[in-house]
Image (cartoon, rainbow, N blue to C red; front, side, top):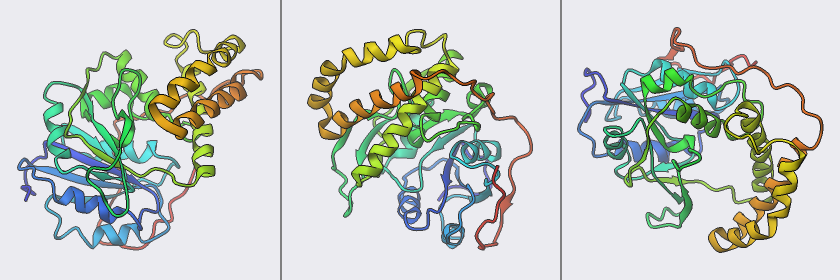
Length: 313
């Protein structure tokens, strides 16, 4: 059991909204981590209306590390609770996972070890199955790669996180806020790395229509990243970029079919449609970014198991 009085070497942060049905499995996985150094777990609740808070608080007394619940419902979306968790964290490093996924058996040790050599670290991702299969399908990407990072499975030095401004809270659509943050981290010179023990079991969307809608929304958010950082993506904006992507579609479909099956094929086509939807009409000005500020940490919840009634902006 972690020393509850010691300063944690790493703070694990779970952003959650209405996670009652899934968060227990993630808490089980974290409670079973063979990690001897002091650490803590912060649940940053984004305004849940179900029994998420009650489920978490019921486990606090027996959890092997300090378990804290934060009121992170002031702004809708995953960026705000992640930033709120970092502001409240006591560790020099922070690690992120999601309430509907399950971390691997040595995830915490992998995160800590990876940060001894890197500023940002991630690892492989497997499909989360029911019943649980530890050897389930490996998905075709790591949570940290040359071009991107997946915010549900990363660890990062807290000072680097704050210096880069954290996740952008003004992000207007679903997805890719982690991609945008990664661009800023790389521009700052952060060292990215991978540890094989930072394994995450990811819950795929099974419904094909919901999957398609998520891909379409994240494809539109791609364009927001390119517009936010035109110096990094000079060739991705304008009608010419859509034409080039359309002309390369046959090759991209062939490559997608070889590497990722029908889902990767669908993503390739839907991404093109989403990019065209954003790039062909006249561009409206983007709202200014809202980045993290080192201010007062969010309110900590202590024993009140009633659902949040937080205001939404």
